[in-house]
Length: 264
Image 1 (tube, helix red, strand yellow):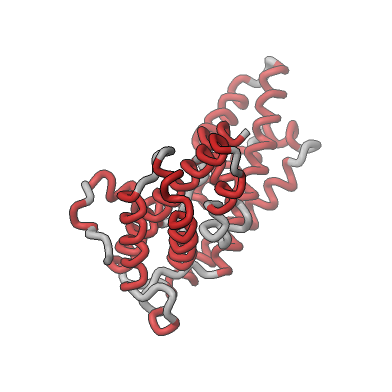
Image 2 (cartoon, rainbow, N blue to C red):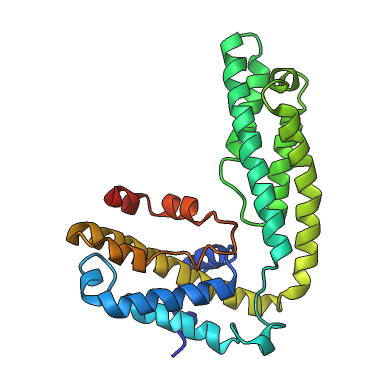
């Protein structure tokens, strides 16, 4: 039975929608099915680590909501939230350009501070790094982050310092990624449903992501406690991250810091 989303508090609703925006509905549906299948085999053990029948029921309800909305059916492609391959590729390339540009600028900042003669430029770099600390999850905000990093790499004091440590190459990647990302985002809009339909799917996706991550954390803790690594493997999030260019391990580690500590 589909979950009743009308009772979700407004603040949590917005948080879940933002989370769900980052994932395709087909991926969350497949991950929910995989996690629920694993739960059927390991339910008693997971309950002792923070994931019980209540959470499994919520996950099943969100999964059923996606199914009722037509996710997974070819005939419903015009209504469901779709994240095209071209957009995923452009986003991942832009995200990689952001990481590399920030790495170059972090080194430049250290060099400028060490020189003691370019405090203003060092402060400019530091400000850019602060403003781009977290990767934007939507195309236009990410494009704006790249633009800021590009402007910083072109700074008259920064550019010479960065010249022999990847600055020109990082700038070229940033400048190429911005129009490619915006173009892919604009073209991808045609494959999405109405704003109301998309928001509903984003909400269901967010609920699923939060719950499968919770199940994953519980499985990691339980597998460590019981000496059963197969349990952790059963709750892996490979379906959830398959369309995100292989970035699942990094993102999962960021979300599940405590669980990773348990696993180690």
